Each structure stands twice: as structure tokens, then as C-alpha cells.
Image (tube, rainbow, N blue to C red; front, side, top):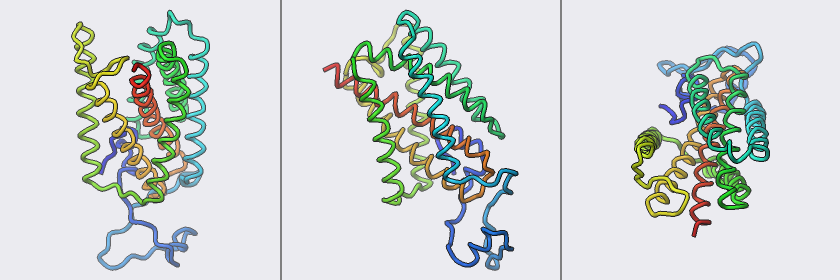
Length: 274
């Protein structure tokens, strides 16, 4: 079982489903180090040995995510407020390329580096700041709306996942994964063609039916990916990953949140263009 988020696909611990915890005497015995006993013929639960700093908890994930998102927001705010408009396009392209390379470097390392996570947050903050400035110059006030909309969407997604007990099945993962790669490939082709003067109309600063459909699909996929990220974080906690892996969880969630924000910003720009 794999996530569409490359951050989690690299970690076998996140990708390995574990049985739901049973709150009985054996569970408490496992928690405090007592020997574990399984039913004859039943597979043993997948667990890792805790690191020297303990095992990952939901508090660890929340704290590291807040740190990562905080660094990104600070970098984005500084870029948004102080970047000269004439440097907006070079900053956008440069930070976009460097940010993509950084994501790959962090995502495909088996050992997560907190320093690299924060470097990514700073670089992606420059990209988000320049990207937001570009839309703000066209549609004043749109950035605040997009930020509020992103956190509302993420909060609603988390609430739905927890309280509606959304189950992330293998079929759900397969559909989201295929759709995400298909969309990414389509947009890549559109970008390359645009460099040579051919615009397929998949991306636009003004509303077109095709651009609106593409952005709507992207938002749905980003929300679905966020649900899958929540599920994989829960798996990591159940599998008792080392506490340092909370940085990987924070990194993965930040990557998805950035994607969700950019797509919401685009959709809002289509409404404003009319």
C-alpha cells in the first residue's frame, strides 16, 4: 500500500499497515515493555525498535509540522512583503526548481534530515511568497482568502477523516495515485508546450472552462492526498517509528498543504477574473 506523497512512499514503516490497536491487558503490557503473545498462526504485528529519543507520537507530528509550516510562512511573508516586482518571475522559477530538487533529495533519503526539511520550508516559502505576490498584484486581497480557505479545507478534511472514520482502502489509494500521476504528466506536457508557444489552456490567470475543471480536479486530489497522509501518519504511530520520523510526517504534510494552497489560489483567481 503506497501513498501518492513521495515522502511516505520511501519509508517502509509508513507504507506498512499494522493492525488497529486493541485496548486490553495485552495492549497495556506491550506499552510498558511486557512480552507480546500472539495467537497461533497469526502474523506478528509490524513494529520497529524505538530510537534513543523514543517513539513518534501525535504530539511530535503536530510540533514538527508547526515548526516546518512556521518556517515556510515566515519565508513566504518576507518574500511577499519585500520582493521587488521585477524579481518576482526569476524568484518564482528559481525557487520552484530548487524546491523540487530539495523535495526529491529529502523524500528519497531513508534517514530524514531535520535541517533539510527546514531548508525545504525556506525555499518553498520563497516560491509561495512570489507565487502569492503574482496573484495579489492581479487580484488584491486574494492571498488572505486563499490562506483562510486552505486551512479551512485542511481542518475540514481532518475532521471528516477522524469523526466520519474515513477508511483509506487499497482501491482508494490506487485511484488517487493514478489520477495524481496522470494530472502531473498532463500539466508537465502543457508546461513544455507553453515554453514553445503552444498553450493548451490547462492553466490560466483568467477563467476558462478547461482551466477551471483542471483546478477543481487538482483540489479534489490534494484533499484526497491529505486524507492518505493522515492515514499514513497514523500507521507510523501504530508501528512505533522512532521519534525522529515525525520530521518526515511533518515534511509530507507540508508538501501536500503547499499543493492545496496553490490550487485554491488558482480557483479563487478564476472567480475574481469574472
